[in-house]
Image 1 (cartoon, rainbow, N blue to C red):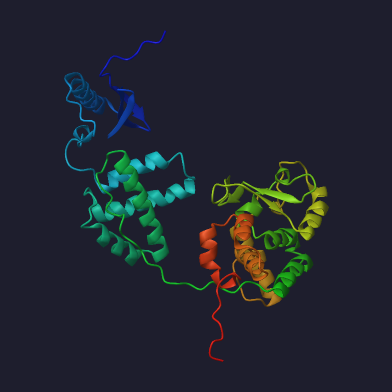
Image 2 (cartoon, rainbow, N blue to C red):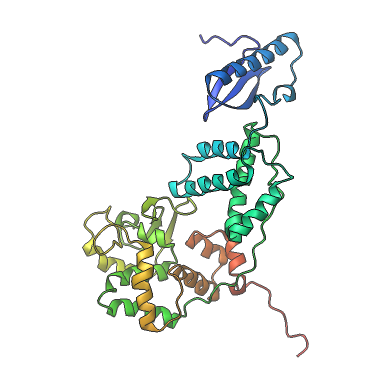
Amino acid sequence: MATRKPKGAVSVESYRGFLRLRWRLHGERYTISLGLPDDAINQQIAAQKAHTIKMDILSGNFDSTLKKYRADNRPGKTISAVKLFQHFIQYKAKQVQPRTLEKYHGLVSWLDEFYGDRPASAKNTEEFIHWLLENLEAVTAKERLGLLNACWEWGMKESLVSENPWQELKVRLKPKQMPKPFTLSEVKTIIQAFRDHSRCQHYADYVQFKFETGCRTGEANGLRWRHLNHDFSVAWFGEAHTHRQFKDTKTGKARDFKLADSTVAMLKQRSAEASSSDALVFPAPKGGAIDEGNFAEREWTTILEVCDITYLRPYYTRHTFISHCLERGMNPVNVAQMTGHNVKTLFERYAGLIQSTPKAPALFS
């Protein structure tokens, strides 16, 4: 028979490298994150805090609001902005891709240059963002502000800071009109040009697939034969290859995509070349995954020049697919589901193409 913990028992635990206290009282569970890294000195501090809680329980002076016990446990001054973000990086290290983590380390450098060993407060955060905007593009500064906001929210949960001074700050981006998509005639011309060009014809099926599915480049690059069903009519997008590594899709979510008849026919013909179910559907000429940068600079640029078509990045195969789907009156929610797009973003970027968008009546003509 399991023995019950004595009344007032408070355990010290290590959680994600930081110390926390846990106990039960009157059938209710309590947890306090101390915001202290798990080391010998902080273990002693945590033990003292646990003893205080235990004595208050036994003497009938327990503070059920926990305010008394959430007081700052850290010795010395408030944690610096740099130290806090370094702790946040340790927390996120196992959750994000290495390339994404590079952005976190880059932001530490900016914080260190601006703050040194000072903490971030509501008095200086706006100045820091203005300074970032002087050195970075607005879209990049906005992304970095998102990381700062996430860091301080996490810091509050871990009792490392008491407030989030970034919460109310915003970076405004200037409205940017998206380029027009390729026309249907241009799409056909581009695909045929790839088939006719001796150096670029290896990529003809790949380009057709991208135009006919609107998938992200990394999703096409990471597609394997086992990601297709038995008759090649459905593709599963759940793995991507980008920046020279295989990983999850951009959103971290997988989706099934029912393919057009022309895409199915192309894949059936191509399947004769498949060496195994794990092989890539669209490998590079010498094997391995296609390098999106090299493809864009060499083959893609070459074909658009041959066709005398205004240059748009390979990404615009996706933009073209979405645009033409909406122009034909497809339900925007269905288009978002097919392409793995965020529905809100789809409405914001393609509002002018959505047929349900109200049109001003000809009142005075």
